[in-house]
Length: 208
Image (cartoon, rainbow, N blue to C red; front, side, top):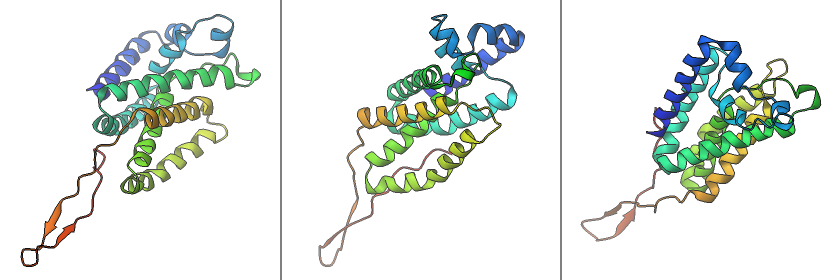
């Protein structure tokens, strides 16, 4: 399972990082200057597996567990991995190219940009499912709005560039690569008259 594998990679990276936090951040955290001046493009990937503490990685891994399992169930493991990687790269590029000049040497780290990509994928799946998917969108719209409010809240030092670019990348990519299964609605037949009644189609519930 891709979701479990990604969580394990993040936890292993955090374990190695904890042995020498400063060295790990110096070698792997993403700053726009390190890419634009130092041409250290690898930091777009390494920064996505580094975290600033137990709370940081804990919140991100819980989000990855909740979103990743649903996207993997709906779109398959290969597409889920592709969405995660593309959102991770898009969020890193957003940090590099959209950060203001005052933040060119400020490090960014964490998996949240890629996780926002999975959030975008969830909404794209809802749109692709048509009317039955609207419930999925309604059920998660408040959570998305809350996360965006937190992202843009002053004083929290959260990279809106990473979150927004990851979200958009996951949404657009999923619209392009996800094809919903054919809708199958059971038909109930009246034994007396032979008249057929089509029952309501229901979308699968996200894993809990």
